[in-house]
Image (cartoon, rainbow, N blue to C red; front, side, top):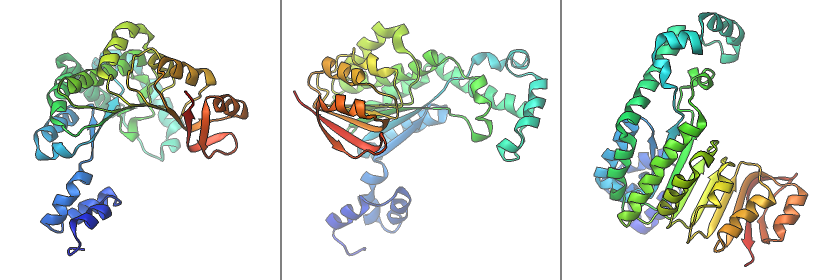
Length: 325
């Protein structure tokens, strides 16, 4: 393979997995140079101090020119009050509850045991780190400083995750903060970064949100106006497992939106129609992993030609509606 011309090598590298690319890049300088656009095509950033530091370090390096997709893994926020041990013991998790759970859930966790102190220590550390980030707004600062350096950036994704080690996932719902607070803080951080990108002539064309369960009605005015500013260059909007944003996004002005995607949520004809009525320039709607009963198919067919496969009233892959205007 070392004798192949660069054009063929690039075509080959485009179809390799990340692990294979890493292996190939170590063989010689030529392979390393040609693999860079694929190795650093997507940058994943966790909402932790180490993740934010990584974002800034990558933005200052030569590989920043290869980053085209920025994925922010936004962890749910922990109730800051659990940093007080007395509050944790009396209001969150008593010793008797711990004994009961250990007896009831031992086999359900594969025989793995965790101590009461380890539970408290783990979530206490998470809460302290999150509180430090929020107190200093290190997340906002990191994105504002970094995003102008990603000259080739065209897609920004925000994915909401638990952000908790698998050993403690069973306990996490007890200490998570309210969704309407936790989720919206992360969303505002990314939208703020989108505004900065726009101000620095970084044209982000695709925006995706995954796992958003909050109700943004509490801050409709301020958030809607900020999103309209930050997303004014967006041509593709993807809402994955985020049903509460469908109605909200129909009220955000997106002047160049052409393609709208919905996935992993219950949708109605009215949901799709409201988006199309709000954004008259949309030419196609893509649906993936949704329930698609016959009545909904008939209603959607009135909007335009439907392309794609579905079976047993379910869309496992993708279907696309080419909207008649």
